Length: 457
Image 1 (tube, rainbow, N blue to C red):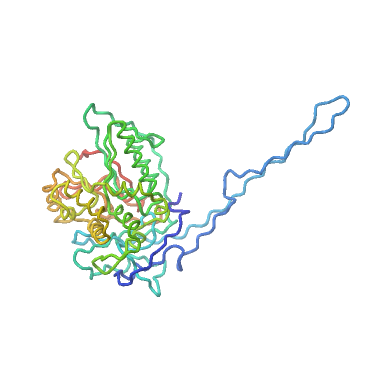
Image 2 (cartoon, rainbow, N blue to C red):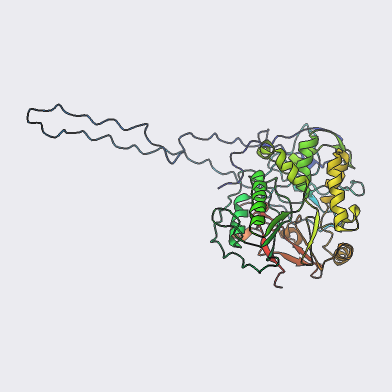
Protein backbone atom coordinates (compact mmCIF):
# COMPACT_ATOMS: atom_id res chain seq x y z
CA UNK A 1 0.00 0.00 0.00
CA UNK A 2 1.09 3.54 -0.44
CA UNK A 3 2.11 5.07 2.83
CA UNK A 4 0.38 8.29 3.74
CA UNK A 5 -2.55 7.87 1.34
CA UNK A 6 -5.84 9.18 2.60
CA UNK A 7 -4.47 11.43 5.30
CA UNK A 8 -5.35 15.07 5.60
CA UNK A 9 -3.15 17.57 3.79
CA UNK A 10 -0.30 19.04 5.74
CA UNK A 11 -1.15 22.53 6.91
CA UNK A 12 1.77 24.95 6.87
CA UNK A 13 1.84 27.72 9.44
CA UNK A 14 3.41 30.58 7.50
CA UNK A 15 4.80 32.76 10.24
CA UNK A 16 7.82 34.75 11.23
CA UNK A 17 9.42 35.97 8.05
CA UNK A 18 12.74 36.66 9.71
CA UNK A 19 13.57 32.98 10.14
CA UNK A 20 16.46 32.08 7.88
CA UNK A 21 15.67 29.26 5.52
CA UNK A 22 17.42 28.87 2.14
CA UNK A 23 15.36 29.33 -1.01
CA UNK A 24 15.19 25.67 -1.84
CA UNK A 25 13.06 25.07 1.26
CA UNK A 26 10.24 27.11 -0.20
CA UNK A 27 8.34 24.22 -1.74
CA UNK A 28 4.53 24.29 -1.68
CA UNK A 29 2.87 21.77 0.61
CA UNK A 30 0.24 19.34 -0.57
CA UNK A 31 -2.88 21.10 -1.67
CA UNK A 32 -1.05 24.27 -2.74
CA UNK A 33 -0.13 25.51 -6.18
CA UNK A 34 2.53 23.50 -7.96
CA UNK A 35 1.41 20.07 -6.75
CA UNK A 36 -0.68 17.72 -8.90
CA UNK A 37 -4.21 17.25 -7.64
CA UNK A 38 -5.12 14.01 -5.96
CA UNK A 39 -8.04 12.28 -7.73
CA UNK A 40 -11.08 11.81 -5.50
CA UNK A 41 -11.78 8.35 -4.28
CA UNK A 42 -14.27 6.41 -6.41
CA UNK A 43 -17.15 5.24 -4.23
CA UNK A 44 -17.42 2.09 -6.36
CA UNK A 45 -13.96 0.93 -5.32
CA UNK A 46 -15.15 -1.57 -2.76
CA UNK A 47 -14.50 -5.24 -3.08
CA UNK A 48 -17.54 -6.14 -1.03
CA UNK A 49 -20.17 -4.33 -3.17
CA UNK A 50 -23.41 -6.36 -3.44
CA UNK A 51 -26.91 -5.53 -4.64
CA UNK A 52 -29.18 -4.11 -1.97
CA UNK A 53 -31.20 -7.30 -1.83
CA UNK A 54 -32.26 -10.25 -3.98
CA UNK A 55 -35.87 -10.10 -5.14
CA UNK A 56 -38.32 -12.38 -3.39
CA UNK A 57 -39.16 -15.59 -5.37
CA UNK A 58 -42.53 -15.48 -7.09
CA UNK A 59 -44.94 -18.30 -6.20
CA UNK A 60 -47.51 -19.65 -8.66
CA UNK A 61 -51.11 -20.10 -7.43
CA UNK A 62 -51.89 -23.53 -6.10
CA UNK A 63 -53.80 -25.83 -8.58
CA UNK A 64 -56.41 -28.22 -7.28
CA UNK A 65 -53.92 -31.11 -7.19
CA UNK A 66 -51.72 -28.93 -4.99
CA UNK A 67 -48.43 -29.47 -6.85
CA UNK A 68 -45.24 -28.10 -5.24
CA UNK A 69 -44.91 -24.36 -5.84
CA UNK A 70 -42.56 -23.31 -8.58
CA UNK A 71 -40.17 -20.42 -8.21
CA UNK A 72 -38.48 -18.17 -10.63
CA UNK A 73 -34.73 -17.95 -10.52
CA UNK A 74 -33.45 -14.82 -8.78
CA UNK A 75 -31.59 -12.46 -11.10
CA UNK A 76 -27.88 -12.99 -11.57
CA UNK A 77 -25.61 -11.27 -9.06
CA UNK A 78 -24.10 -8.30 -10.89
CA UNK A 79 -20.35 -7.98 -10.88
CA UNK A 80 -19.10 -5.15 -8.64
CA UNK A 81 -17.64 -2.19 -10.43
CA UNK A 82 -14.08 -1.24 -9.67
CA UNK A 83 -12.46 2.11 -10.01
CA UNK A 84 -9.22 2.34 -11.86
CA UNK A 85 -6.38 3.34 -9.57
CA UNK A 86 -4.90 6.75 -10.38
CA UNK A 87 -1.58 6.71 -12.15
CA UNK A 88 1.41 7.27 -9.91
CA UNK A 89 3.35 10.44 -10.60
CA UNK A 90 6.90 10.04 -11.76
CA UNK A 91 9.16 10.26 -8.70
CA UNK A 92 11.97 12.72 -8.49
CA UNK A 93 15.53 11.47 -8.32
CA UNK A 94 17.36 11.50 -5.03
CA UNK A 95 20.09 14.05 -4.57
CA UNK A 96 23.74 13.19 -4.57
CA UNK A 97 25.07 12.10 -1.20
CA UNK A 98 25.77 15.22 0.87
CA UNK A 99 29.30 16.17 1.75
CA UNK A 100 30.20 15.03 5.23
CA UNK A 101 30.47 18.09 7.45
CA UNK A 102 33.05 18.30 10.17
CA UNK A 103 30.63 19.73 12.71
CA UNK A 104 28.78 17.38 15.03
CA UNK A 105 25.43 19.00 14.33
CA UNK A 106 24.52 17.64 10.93
CA UNK A 107 21.31 19.28 9.68
CA UNK A 108 18.13 17.83 8.21
CA UNK A 109 16.54 18.63 4.83
CA UNK A 110 13.93 21.32 4.46
CA UNK A 111 10.70 20.42 2.75
CA UNK A 112 7.10 20.64 3.91
CA UNK A 113 6.09 17.23 2.57
CA UNK A 114 5.74 14.59 5.24
CA UNK A 115 6.02 11.00 4.14
CA UNK A 116 8.38 8.09 3.70
CA UNK A 117 11.85 9.53 3.48
CA UNK A 118 10.67 13.08 4.04
CA UNK A 119 12.52 15.33 6.41
CA UNK A 120 12.15 18.97 7.16
CA UNK A 121 13.94 21.96 8.68
CA UNK A 122 13.85 23.15 12.25
CA UNK A 123 11.85 26.34 11.89
CA UNK A 124 9.24 28.11 9.83
CA UNK A 125 9.95 28.92 6.21
CA UNK A 126 8.95 32.42 5.04
CA UNK A 127 6.15 32.87 2.56
CA UNK A 128 7.72 33.28 -0.87
CA UNK A 129 6.15 35.35 -3.62
CA UNK A 130 7.46 32.93 -6.25
CA UNK A 131 7.84 29.52 -4.60
CA UNK A 132 10.19 26.96 -6.06
CA UNK A 133 8.49 24.68 -8.55
CA UNK A 134 7.33 21.38 -7.07
CA UNK A 135 9.60 19.47 -9.42
CA UNK A 136 12.74 21.11 -8.07
CA UNK A 137 14.52 19.10 -5.37
CA UNK A 138 14.78 21.12 -2.15
CA UNK A 139 18.27 19.80 -1.54
CA UNK A 140 19.65 21.49 -4.66
CA UNK A 141 20.34 24.86 -3.12
CA UNK A 142 23.46 24.12 -1.12
CA UNK A 143 24.13 24.65 2.56
CA UNK A 144 23.65 28.04 4.25
CA UNK A 145 26.76 29.42 5.85
CA UNK A 146 25.26 32.04 8.14
CA UNK A 147 23.84 29.99 11.02
CA UNK A 148 25.04 31.34 14.39
CA UNK A 149 27.16 29.19 16.65
CA UNK A 150 25.22 26.44 18.38
CA UNK A 151 22.28 26.49 15.94
CA UNK A 152 21.57 23.24 14.14
CA UNK A 153 18.61 22.78 11.78
CA UNK A 154 17.39 19.21 11.55
CA UNK A 155 18.25 16.76 8.74
CA UNK A 156 18.35 19.11 5.77
CA UNK A 157 20.15 16.53 3.69
CA UNK A 158 17.66 13.65 3.81
CA UNK A 159 16.05 12.84 0.45
CA UNK A 160 12.49 13.90 -0.29
CA UNK A 161 9.77 11.42 -1.18
CA UNK A 162 6.46 13.08 -1.96
CA UNK A 163 3.28 11.74 -0.45
CA UNK A 164 1.95 8.89 -2.56
CA UNK A 165 5.14 8.36 -4.57
CA UNK A 166 6.51 5.36 -2.74
CA UNK A 167 5.04 1.88 -2.72
CA UNK A 168 5.68 0.39 0.69
CA UNK A 169 5.60 -3.38 0.49
CA UNK A 170 3.90 -4.90 3.55
CA UNK A 171 6.10 -7.20 5.59
CA UNK A 172 4.59 -10.12 7.47
CA UNK A 173 7.42 -12.42 8.61
CA UNK A 174 6.68 -15.52 10.55
CA UNK A 175 6.87 -14.98 14.27
CA UNK A 176 10.14 -16.11 15.84
CA UNK A 177 10.16 -18.20 19.00
CA UNK A 178 9.74 -16.10 22.12
CA UNK A 179 13.02 -15.28 23.91
CA UNK A 180 13.82 -17.94 26.46
CA UNK A 181 13.32 -16.83 30.08
CA UNK A 182 16.51 -16.48 32.09
CA UNK A 183 15.30 -17.55 35.51
CA UNK A 184 14.85 -15.01 38.27
CA UNK A 185 17.31 -12.48 36.80
CA UNK A 186 16.66 -9.97 34.03
CA UNK A 187 15.75 -11.34 30.63
CA UNK A 188 17.46 -10.64 27.28
CA UNK A 189 17.88 -7.00 26.28
CA UNK A 190 16.46 -5.62 23.00
CA UNK A 191 16.56 -2.14 21.50
CA UNK A 192 14.40 -0.52 18.80
CA UNK A 193 15.49 2.30 16.50
CA UNK A 194 13.44 5.26 15.22
CA UNK A 195 9.87 4.26 14.29
CA UNK A 196 8.44 7.58 12.97
CA UNK A 197 4.85 6.37 12.71
CA UNK A 198 5.47 3.12 10.80
CA UNK A 199 3.26 0.93 12.96
CA UNK A 200 2.95 -2.07 10.60
CA UNK A 201 6.70 -2.26 10.12
CA UNK A 202 7.21 -2.06 13.89
CA UNK A 203 4.81 -4.93 14.62
CA UNK A 204 6.45 -7.05 11.91
CA UNK A 205 9.93 -6.40 13.33
CA UNK A 206 8.82 -7.21 16.89
CA UNK A 207 7.17 -10.45 15.69
CA UNK A 208 10.32 -11.44 13.83
CA UNK A 209 12.19 -11.29 17.17
CA UNK A 210 9.47 -13.19 19.01
CA UNK A 211 8.66 -10.22 21.24
CA UNK A 212 4.96 -10.04 20.32
CA UNK A 213 2.45 -12.63 19.14
CA UNK A 214 0.27 -12.61 16.03
CA UNK A 215 -2.16 -10.25 17.75
CA UNK A 216 0.56 -7.78 18.75
CA UNK A 217 0.50 -8.81 22.41
CA UNK A 218 3.61 -9.17 24.57
CA UNK A 219 5.05 -12.67 24.14
CA UNK A 220 8.58 -12.30 25.53
CA UNK A 221 8.16 -13.09 29.22
CA UNK A 222 10.85 -11.36 31.27
CA UNK A 223 12.67 -9.86 28.27
CA UNK A 224 13.65 -6.18 28.39
CA UNK A 225 12.79 -3.88 25.48
CA UNK A 226 13.99 -0.29 25.03
CA UNK A 227 12.73 2.12 22.38
CA UNK A 228 15.27 4.83 21.53
CA UNK A 229 12.72 7.57 20.74
CA UNK A 230 11.10 9.30 17.73
CA UNK A 231 7.73 7.55 17.62
CA UNK A 232 5.82 10.09 15.52
CA UNK A 233 6.07 12.39 12.46
CA UNK A 234 6.68 11.51 8.80
CA UNK A 235 4.94 8.11 8.94
CA UNK A 236 1.26 7.16 8.78
CA UNK A 237 0.35 6.36 12.42
CA UNK A 238 2.48 7.97 15.10
CA UNK A 239 -0.24 7.90 17.77
CA UNK A 240 -0.82 4.22 17.01
CA UNK A 241 2.87 3.59 17.71
CA UNK A 242 2.66 5.39 21.07
CA UNK A 243 -0.49 3.45 21.98
CA UNK A 244 1.27 0.16 21.17
CA UNK A 245 4.35 1.00 23.25
CA UNK A 246 2.19 2.09 26.20
CA UNK A 247 0.19 -1.15 26.03
CA UNK A 248 3.30 -3.34 25.71
CA UNK A 249 4.77 -1.58 28.75
CA UNK A 250 1.84 -2.77 30.88
CA UNK A 251 1.79 -6.28 29.40
CA UNK A 252 5.55 -6.77 29.77
CA UNK A 253 5.48 -5.66 33.41
CA UNK A 254 2.72 -8.17 34.13
CA UNK A 255 4.85 -10.93 32.55
CA UNK A 256 7.96 -10.09 34.59
CA UNK A 257 9.80 -8.13 31.90
CA UNK A 258 9.58 -4.53 30.80
CA UNK A 259 9.13 -2.30 27.78
CA UNK A 260 10.48 1.24 28.19
CA UNK A 261 11.25 4.21 25.99
CA UNK A 262 13.61 7.18 25.74
CA UNK A 263 12.77 10.71 24.70
CA UNK A 264 13.73 11.73 21.18
CA UNK A 265 13.79 15.15 19.57
CA UNK A 266 10.45 14.48 17.85
CA UNK A 267 8.76 13.85 21.20
CA UNK A 268 9.99 17.28 22.31
CA UNK A 269 8.77 18.77 19.03
CA UNK A 270 5.28 17.28 19.34
CA UNK A 271 4.99 18.36 22.99
CA UNK A 272 6.05 21.88 22.03
CA UNK A 273 3.65 22.08 19.09
CA UNK A 274 0.75 21.05 21.32
CA UNK A 275 1.67 23.27 24.29
CA UNK A 276 2.99 26.40 22.59
CA UNK A 277 1.54 26.34 19.05
CA UNK A 278 2.40 29.61 17.27
CA UNK A 279 4.05 31.26 20.28
CA UNK A 280 7.29 32.83 18.98
CA UNK A 281 10.51 31.41 20.40
CA UNK A 282 14.07 32.64 20.14
CA UNK A 283 15.62 30.06 17.83
CA UNK A 284 19.14 31.47 17.76
CA UNK A 285 18.71 32.41 14.09
CA UNK A 286 15.69 34.67 14.40
CA UNK A 287 12.27 33.76 15.68
CA UNK A 288 10.35 30.56 15.01
CA UNK A 289 7.41 28.59 16.40
CA UNK A 290 7.01 24.99 17.51
CA UNK A 291 3.94 24.65 15.29
CA UNK A 292 5.83 25.65 12.15
CA UNK A 293 8.84 23.50 13.06
CA UNK A 294 6.61 20.49 13.71
CA UNK A 295 4.87 20.81 10.34
CA UNK A 296 8.14 21.26 8.49
CA UNK A 297 9.70 18.28 10.26
CA UNK A 298 7.03 15.81 9.18
CA UNK A 299 4.19 16.60 11.59
CA UNK A 300 0.98 14.80 10.65
CA UNK A 301 -2.39 16.49 11.25
CA UNK A 302 -4.12 13.20 12.03
CA UNK A 303 -1.57 12.58 14.81
CA UNK A 304 -2.26 16.00 16.35
CA UNK A 305 -6.03 15.38 16.09
CA UNK A 306 -5.67 12.10 18.02
CA UNK A 307 -3.13 13.37 20.56
CA UNK A 308 -4.57 13.14 24.09
CA UNK A 309 -3.42 14.25 27.53
CA UNK A 310 -2.39 10.69 28.38
CA UNK A 311 0.02 10.70 25.42
CA UNK A 312 1.49 14.07 26.44
CA UNK A 313 1.95 12.96 30.05
CA UNK A 314 3.62 9.73 28.96
CA UNK A 315 6.04 11.49 26.61
CA UNK A 316 6.88 14.19 29.18
CA UNK A 317 7.99 11.56 31.70
CA UNK A 318 10.36 9.70 29.38
CA UNK A 319 14.01 9.61 30.37
CA UNK A 320 16.66 11.02 28.05
CA UNK A 321 19.49 8.59 28.82
CA UNK A 322 19.84 5.24 30.63
CA UNK A 323 22.49 2.56 31.15
CA UNK A 324 21.60 -1.10 30.66
CA UNK A 325 24.07 -4.02 30.77
CA UNK A 326 27.04 -1.70 30.25
CA UNK A 327 25.34 -0.06 27.24
CA UNK A 328 24.66 3.67 27.41
CA UNK A 329 21.32 4.17 25.64
CA UNK A 330 20.31 7.58 24.28
CA UNK A 331 18.44 8.96 21.30
CA UNK A 332 20.79 11.43 19.63
CA UNK A 333 24.41 10.98 18.58
CA UNK A 334 25.49 14.18 20.30
CA UNK A 335 27.43 15.19 23.39
CA UNK A 336 24.77 17.82 24.25
CA UNK A 337 23.54 15.57 27.08
CA UNK A 338 26.59 16.77 29.03
CA UNK A 339 24.98 20.24 29.18
CA UNK A 340 22.23 18.88 31.44
CA UNK A 341 24.11 17.06 34.18
CA UNK A 342 27.13 15.03 35.23
CA UNK A 343 25.15 11.88 36.05
CA UNK A 344 22.36 10.02 34.30
CA UNK A 345 19.98 10.95 37.10
CA UNK A 346 20.90 14.63 36.82
CA UNK A 347 20.27 14.68 33.06
CA UNK A 348 16.87 13.04 33.35
CA UNK A 349 15.82 15.23 36.29
CA UNK A 350 16.87 18.39 34.45
CA UNK A 351 14.94 17.44 31.31
CA UNK A 352 11.81 16.69 33.35
CA UNK A 353 12.14 19.98 35.23
CA UNK A 354 12.40 21.93 31.97
CA UNK A 355 9.20 20.34 30.67
CA UNK A 356 7.45 20.97 34.00
CA UNK A 357 8.38 24.69 33.98
CA UNK A 358 6.69 24.93 30.58
CA UNK A 359 8.80 27.80 29.26
CA UNK A 360 8.68 27.86 25.44
CA UNK A 361 12.22 29.22 24.96
CA UNK A 362 13.69 26.71 27.40
CA UNK A 363 11.93 23.76 25.75
CA UNK A 364 13.00 25.02 22.33
CA UNK A 365 16.65 25.12 23.43
CA UNK A 366 16.34 21.54 24.69
CA UNK A 367 14.80 20.46 21.39
CA UNK A 368 17.49 22.29 19.41
CA UNK A 369 20.32 20.58 21.29
CA UNK A 370 18.73 17.14 20.93
CA UNK A 371 18.60 17.58 17.14
CA UNK A 372 22.40 17.77 16.87
CA UNK A 373 23.97 14.73 15.28
CA UNK A 374 27.05 12.96 13.88
CA UNK A 375 29.24 13.76 16.90
CA UNK A 376 30.59 10.17 16.87
CA UNK A 377 31.44 10.07 13.17
CA UNK A 378 34.71 11.13 11.57
CA UNK A 379 38.08 11.42 13.28
CA UNK A 380 36.86 12.96 16.54
CA UNK A 381 34.08 10.41 17.02
CA UNK A 382 35.82 7.97 19.38
CA UNK A 383 36.89 10.82 21.65
CA UNK A 384 33.33 12.19 21.78
CA UNK A 385 31.98 8.75 22.73
CA UNK A 386 34.66 8.34 25.39
CA UNK A 387 33.61 11.68 26.89
CA UNK A 388 30.05 10.43 27.34
CA UNK A 389 31.11 7.00 28.60
CA UNK A 390 33.60 8.54 31.02
CA UNK A 391 30.86 10.73 32.48
CA UNK A 392 27.85 8.39 32.55
CA UNK A 393 29.46 4.95 32.49
CA UNK A 394 29.15 2.01 30.14
CA UNK A 395 31.40 0.56 27.46
CA UNK A 396 29.35 1.41 24.36
CA UNK A 397 26.86 4.06 23.28
CA UNK A 398 23.68 2.87 21.51
CA UNK A 399 21.72 5.59 19.71
CA UNK A 400 19.12 6.34 17.03
CA UNK A 401 18.42 9.71 15.38
CA UNK A 402 20.95 9.65 12.50
CA UNK A 403 19.96 7.23 9.70
CA UNK A 404 22.57 4.56 9.03
CA UNK A 405 22.49 5.20 5.24
CA UNK A 406 23.81 8.68 5.94
CA UNK A 407 26.42 7.53 8.40
CA UNK A 408 27.62 5.23 5.61
CA UNK A 409 27.28 7.83 2.84
CA UNK A 410 24.58 5.83 1.02
CA UNK A 411 21.75 7.52 -0.85
CA UNK A 412 18.71 5.64 -2.14
CA UNK A 413 16.14 6.60 -4.76
CA UNK A 414 12.41 7.17 -4.75
CA UNK A 415 11.29 4.56 -7.27
CA UNK A 416 10.95 1.79 -4.71
CA UNK A 417 13.17 -0.70 -6.55
CA UNK A 418 14.85 -3.13 -4.19
CA UNK A 419 18.30 -2.72 -5.72
CA UNK A 420 18.20 1.06 -5.24
CA UNK A 421 17.00 1.23 -1.66
CA UNK A 422 19.41 2.00 1.17
CA UNK A 423 21.25 -1.15 2.15
CA UNK A 424 20.67 -1.68 5.86
CA UNK A 425 21.22 -5.21 7.13
CA UNK A 426 21.52 -4.35 10.80
CA UNK A 427 22.98 -1.92 13.32
CA UNK A 428 26.07 0.08 12.34
CA UNK A 429 29.04 -0.28 14.70
CA UNK A 430 31.56 2.55 14.37
CA UNK A 431 33.77 5.04 16.29
CA UNK A 432 36.38 2.32 16.94
CA UNK A 433 33.60 -0.04 18.02
CA UNK A 434 32.37 2.32 20.75
CA UNK A 435 29.07 3.38 19.11
CA UNK A 436 26.10 1.43 17.70
CA UNK A 437 23.67 3.26 15.39
CA UNK A 438 20.10 1.90 15.36
CA UNK A 439 18.17 4.19 12.95
CA UNK A 440 17.85 1.96 9.88
CA UNK A 441 16.17 4.69 7.83
CA UNK A 442 12.59 3.38 7.74
CA UNK A 443 11.43 6.81 6.51
CA UNK A 444 13.57 6.40 3.38
CA UNK A 445 12.53 2.81 2.61
CA UNK A 446 15.32 1.44 4.78
CA UNK A 447 14.77 -0.94 7.68
CA UNK A 448 13.18 -0.63 11.11
CA UNK A 449 15.69 -2.28 13.43
CA UNK A 450 14.88 -4.40 16.49
CA UNK A 451 18.00 -6.20 17.78
CA UNK A 452 19.24 -8.01 20.85
CA UNK A 453 22.23 -6.70 22.78
CA UNK A 454 25.06 -7.40 23.05
CA UNK A 455 25.74 -7.75 19.36
CA UNK A 456 27.63 -10.80 18.19
CA UNK A 457 30.44 -8.87 16.54
